[in-house]
Image (tube, rainbow, N blue to C red; front, side, top):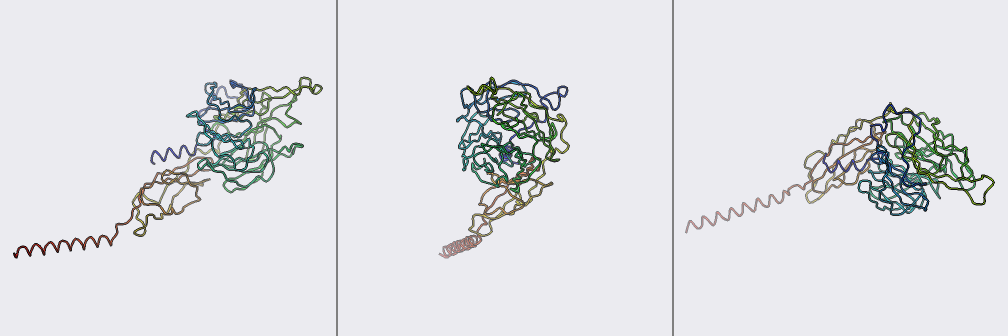
Length: 463
């Protein structure tokens, strides 16, 4: 494969969470289903965005003591240290984050800012066509899905980073707030919704399949949580599960002294829930992300009354947190038996590494069959022609109207575990056939010229 194409593919489809196979803690320190405190953020905040790239955690934006901020802090779990990075261009809070090509997408209504940790720079992208306040976003096969939110609690808007464009897909069957996460290339949305007056205590687990554009239902969580998040373990260092962390709903954001923030664990394969260890520090609107199959819950806030419930004159007291707590999942240190770390093998049969000629003289393009094989079922297939934008396909097809010139082609596919298999890059050339009429004309002209030359020569000899 050509170096440029290989680099393009690697950059194009690195997913939202980057997982290393080495554990962050030694085997002697592992205590599954437990929490430990880590170094706090440099600035206490809540309603912040969280994301992990290359085993580093980024805590972005949110509400601080001085209002909405664009603060961007990088946390290194290996050294347990925080560092300030370049702030957002537009400070926002309570927004969705997603990672694509190792860049962090921060999405809220008319604001989409993208952070590149490598260059420590920000850029702005096209906003949603339908303005929507969303707090969760998920990446599947190179596209970012923003589902639910406000005012439309069922809307499903999809962003394509490759083209900087938006489309709309099948809406959720039921209105819902709550949390969402990707598991085996499907999006799980869990929770009920708050309509401003009453709570729907019938919580839901709605499952979206981007491949079929269809929704189904799973077993709902036991407790409806607010200001919560969901994350999934990969199976590399812990069994594949979905963890839903957050605080149970109360009549307001004011937290009672006996309120615990729960940790609910869902097994999609068995469609069952169990309780994990509760979050040690009670708080709302924190951020959550996963590195090496370890969960990190960071930031948050509480509101309490000094003499609750008698003294209402001055309103609740708001406390902001920089707290950073790490959770070790059930079975940590043992890979999931169902984890598939093997990528599918893709081989291109046609086009071949050779020269093709246009079908008719005078045309400057031709059609060539794209035929390939894959050694296992795949979730999605794409091809890249001439190092361009990946194109999604369902199987063998025809490459239509290829222009005269040199071309390169690579096919790749994702299996259900997210492994990417890539074919060798095929290099081929399209040329126009040498015109036969021109050859005949040139040949006859040459004979005529030679004949005339001989006649002149013999005439001169007679004289």
